[in-house]
Length: 103
Length: 353
Image (cartoon, rainbow over all chains, first blue to last red; front, side, top):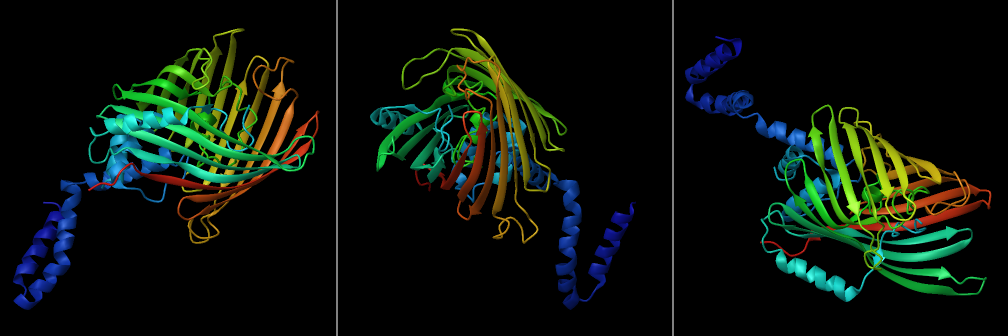
């Protein structure tokens, strides 16, 4: 048993051993932490995608021009396809940019 | 020759009725698109004042760009230029001479064949070095005028009519490479004028270093066949608003280079503060004539020009471009003052749900 899982077990045990009035408070404090601690193992993709898409945006798009101050999400696909041709982006870069512009 | 005010030299005159008819046809065909693929209208509009050798020209200009996806693999895109110009009458006569210009810059269809290949057909911007494809739109360039070496390798019109393949050769975290190869046929029609030529370009980009190095080659395939070689280096250090761009081009009869640097400080509450919106720009141009044959469009004599610019990035996609240039040549030195206001627009062709 790792230290993390031991701590989690102890936390849950402490949670259910506390009086009712304080259980809610404890839950409010600890539940997000518990959920958060599971996220990296279960679903690391969104954070990685956003950061990679942003990085591609900074490297490939900002190389030539300043970012426009907002645009309709209805044209995000058209913009990316236009830039894929113009900037010779790869299919992967196009997909990551799409996730970045439409999180 | 590059235009003095903005860069519209690669635009050709086109009948407005035909342009509207073509645009209407595309819009009618554009119902086969998904939610995020609505056709867009982008571009820039601006006003420029250019004082060259003591004579001032005023010029409002609009450069609309239309991009329209057709299904998941096709895209039709086009850019045009509409300009009015008031230039002083020649021979010291009082008053101004007025002219207008409507031209189609390019009109191309893109077919995304695979993850590494995109086929392009139609009238396209010549893929020689970087300026023509990347920096010539008025809402992107830091200066109103093109570099002195612009005409070198761009086959006089800056546009090819034919076919092109391009795409990402490979893309890794440490290195990305892309390529472009084209063939253009001779078109003497005034609407789609182009030279018979072929060539290509390859770029190597190091994402960690933010460094790009590219090589271009074009060959003129009519009259006296001539080769043009070019190389460019771009560097934009991470976490800074500093940009360095440079190009070197060599033809049979002339060669030259330009280097450009611009910077915006983040030290005073970031780029959106009033200080952070200030953008000093510098560009150095030099051309060297190798012989007296000037078919390539460059100046007849060796020429040097230093451009000192101070741009201001206003909110709402608006920029103020100002610059002072001093040009040195054996035929005479002179000053060039340029001031302009550019607005960039970007919106869907129709309202969504």
